Image (cartoon, rainbow, N blue to C red):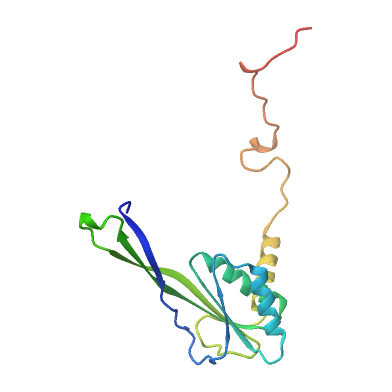
Length: 185
């Protein structure tokens, strides 16, 4: 690729994977360079208004983690939100042209499919039979259940009885080596 340079990057528009959404829905397109505080400030302001009932977050590639973080923050701040999550791919096309055109190299087109996520949050109930549906408050009950199971299953150990602790006895000291220095009295 040292004989080529990237000329264009075309990202194909991702179709909304959830059917029957209103056309005026607010879609937060999260990118890698997006600031979470800016995204959340705008989204929280819109969702706290009484006339906005649904908001969608979408992101792909390196912005995937930020998209999920924004959704989780929104669910913690605004209780009783219904959620539908869809995972899909976004197609990206890169066009590469030769640096020196006299050599006889052709231009290249590289197509990539990057993972993408689309999350719909709604104050109104959504279709629970839709794949990817999550009811409000279900994440808290799941975490509480896991915490209870974890705390019951753990036993208190005696200090020094972990793996490699020689069955509770003190570890022997290493013998003095070549690098040790001693003071002569």
